Length: 322
Image (cartoon, rainbow, N blue to C red):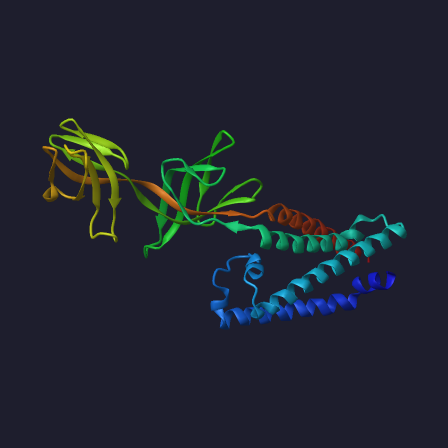
């Protein structure tokens, strides 16, 4: 058992595994670059792709996975051995433990990548407007959208003010391209993909009155309810078109497709109906990412920071006393 322990914590194994991981990463990058069709569907840090799509061409990854396991075991045992040796010799100077703390951060990094690669996922894009939208345990709606552009027209700053409802509580957040909304200690992440103005309803002229109607709402014409069933926007059509559904005397629904504009007025149930305008509200297109490795990543940052501070302090102290 001691032979196995000594082998797993040996510096030679660490060097061999380190070079192996580096070489396999190079091979993997080249393979994905020249054979991209084998990696359709792979995104981000998701490594479950390789286990659900088992192919001989992925052999480099399976070897890499095993190498990383040995790398983690080697780093863990080396760190543990270093701490035990310092404890046995009665070392009480905290700065001397700086390198060991950095190594602990490295081990946690490997675990974080494993957890994130196996269990993180990104949901399909969702459009959020001024109505509550369910994002999976969290609801969100857009309150305001502020934009600014460079002289050439490229977007400069995109700031969407959103209201979040979670566990019965509401609070405001700011959402932008480089400013995601983070919840559950960063595990739940809402990322902006696009922004703009989205249709929220239409303006109809019914004889001498104006109606603001939202999708799936009805309006009255001579005692008959007419349903605003759908809205078609460019590029689906050259110009906005709405679908209205009314019930005739034989109780069979009748569909009317009404283009925008005064020249396209139609008579429906004895009333002149005109599609006058489209009501728009600020909206954003977002992706929701669940990454359970974020708390481990935060722990990694803490350990690395503390360890490096202690290492630097030790170096400075040596320079001072020398």
